[in-house]
Image 1 (cartoon, rainbow, N blue to C red):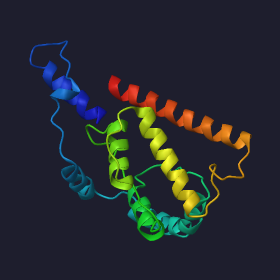
Image 2: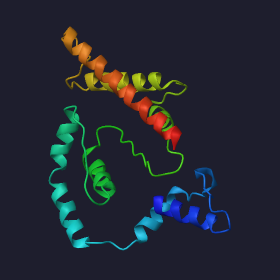
Image 3: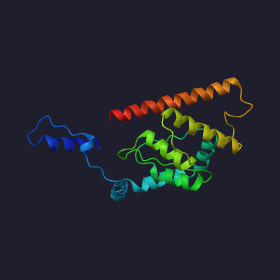
Length: 188
C-alpha cells in the first residue's frame, strides 16, 4: 500500500506541482471482494514449502484450541499470510462458539466499528457508544459465557480479591490499548 501511495503521490507531483501530496481520502479503494480476488491471482512463491508448513500447522490445531479454551491467545507471525491456516483452524476446531474475522487491511476498518460488529453479530446487542462500554460489555459477556460453559474464569465465586484485582487490571489494560489504537487510527 505504501508503494502505491508513493507512486500516486509522485504521479500527482509530476503534473508540475513538486510539493503535491495525496490524502487517503483521494485514493479510490477497491472493495474487499476485488482485493481478495486479486490476492488469489498472485503467483504463489514457494508453494511446496507453504503446503508443508500448512500441514505441520494442522497437527497443532488441537493444541491451539486447548490453549484458547484455557484463556491464552495465539500469536501467528512470520513471512506470508496466515489467513488460510487460521480460517482452516477456525473451521475445524472452533465449532463451539462464534468466530470473528476482521480484515484490518480494508479501508475504513476502525477498532470501534469492529467492536460494534462483534457486539451486534456475536451478542445481538447494539447501542453502546463509548469504547469503555464496548470493551466492558465484551469482556463481561465472554466471562459469563466461560462460566456458563464451566471453564475457569475470573468471575468464579471462589475468586479472591487478588484475582478480581488482576481481572480488573487486565480489563483496564485492554481498554487503554484499544483507546490508544483508536487514536492512532484517527491520525492516519
